[in-house]
Length: 355
Image (cartoon, rainbow, N blue to C red; front, side, top):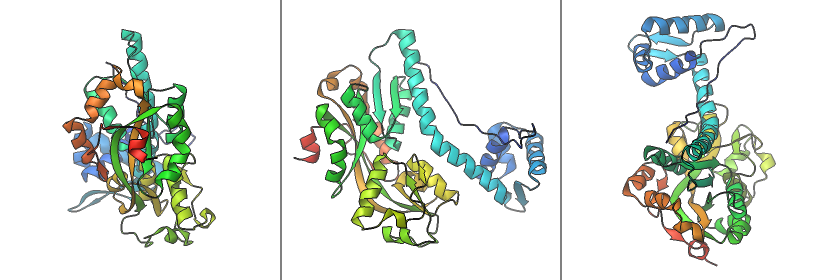
């Protein structure tokens, strides 16, 4: 099986034909992570002299230093250097799921062309860290997977139309379960779906480290000095946000930044970490990865829906085996806020949600 890797890369150009070296941003990221220029050079396989030249040329172009050397503290990014690094992390957080989805589709097409394989599983799913982990595990085991990231509603609609074999979606636990299901019910019923448990995950408010704006509830979002970053319309998490706001009797028009949105939980976290917002809502994993504070509010269950007859298909067997494996469950349980105790369990709609 051939693996396809697509990575975001960006460069700076002042419009005069002078483009900064592509490795500048990568070098700054490694300096931030390693704490010294020497360690960053070792990790990247660059000579110290070359790396120093890259930084010197970039500083001349900007008219400001990107790195500051401090005795006993190694190399520290300047304010401008930090901005460039956070821009890179925001780009990666927003685009990596898109590129991973495209890479998976290309891998499946190559596999079909080379082996005429017909049993490659088509998975349409709402993006999540457990789904990412499943794709990585399939990569490691050389099992092709045709994965397309989309919203929960889009995934279930594709399943009902026969456009995919398995659809990933998530439903909150508790009082918002039934209001959420009303948006999914038609496609779930028409496809005669069975549900395969993936994981339970915790969601809450993500705030900048230290929570300087003292955001502790949805009501705090209505204060004029608090900047919010939302999820895109149509996303399952956006649906949950709107249900939570309605329950708290908050008019979205009162929230500064309600119309500013990102497309993944990681992109929301990166947006906050870069200083462009004070608070967002999402799963706990990216909050920890980006060094944010996290206030847990609700849990939700993530399922894969499939047709009953698909459970016995050749393509489905590796998925069920992986979801039920101790190794996969350990990977998911290591994600902050995730619990894979029921992973691989197959349920009817009535088993999962009652009448």
